[in-house]
Image 1 (cartoon, rainbow, N blue to C red):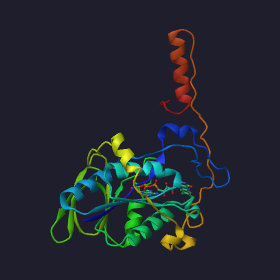
Image 2 (image 1 turned 120 degrees about the vertical axis):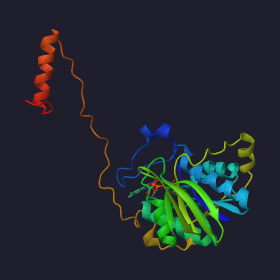
Image 3 (image 1 turned 180 degrees about the vertical axis):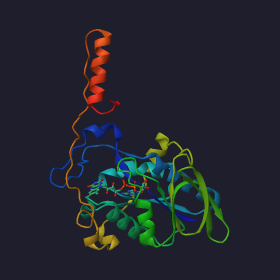
Length: 266
Ligand SMILES: Cc1cc2nc3c(=O)[nH]c(=O)nc-3n(C[C@H](O)[C@H](O)[C@H](O)COP(=O)(O)OP(=O)(O)OC[C@H]3O[C@@H](n4cnc5c(N)ncnc54)[C@H](O)[C@@H]3O)c2cc1C
């Protein structure tokens, strides 16, 4: 069983209030901000490791991110991944979800035979939930999102339990397939300090645009149909007001304001 897991290192949430925006490209400047792996990406990796450990095979982690995220990706080796490929090139910068999915799918094809591609349902920062379905479309294979349970069946098929708005649904599909895992599918294993030290001795492959032979017009900012027109911090419109005086006077004043605001029947 050859399993590819897509993980996206994200800026540490404790730094989000301090993430500067590039005024020209309207993209985030992530230099100097530490990265972490999102919970759902760890769940996807945990699921892949459990499947490999019960059926045999290989788990390859693929990530499109800046070179500065290498340190974070060693965590996936420490968790038990067999191989990590970082897709990094200056021309990938500024990619929207379509350009990201195109690069990921091209890398997955280059890896050769695969049976399962596991992703998180949503990244912890941008969280559109678009990448897994788009990767599946580029690979022309089935996909299921919100996956809570994965059972491999005979004959190259898989049965999944997926969350719906009002319960869950059981689906079967052929492999290879892309599955996006939902929170609660498992509890990802913890990484020990010794495991991290040992992982740092191992190699992480880095593939750029020339290794992937991607179409330059379909990657990065130029290959992204989503254009950010403007980015701004919303102005706080809510403000508190202290009513003073006797209780009756304050109630009258409050009622008058509520009527004026149109939230009270007149
Ligand atoms: C115009 C534009 C410019 C942008 N520029 C930048 C930029 O310069 N730098 C930047 O960091 N972001 C940038 N973004 C955001 C970037 O497009 C998204 O972060 C990225 O496409 C993933 O989308 P998402 O976070 O919504 O993933 P989701 O679809 O929510 O993620 C679901 C799952 O897909 C997988 N996945 C998602 N992204 C990756 C990845 N990169 N590698 C491996 N697996 C992945 C993970 O398993 C994840 O759990 C830009 C967005 C736009 C619209």
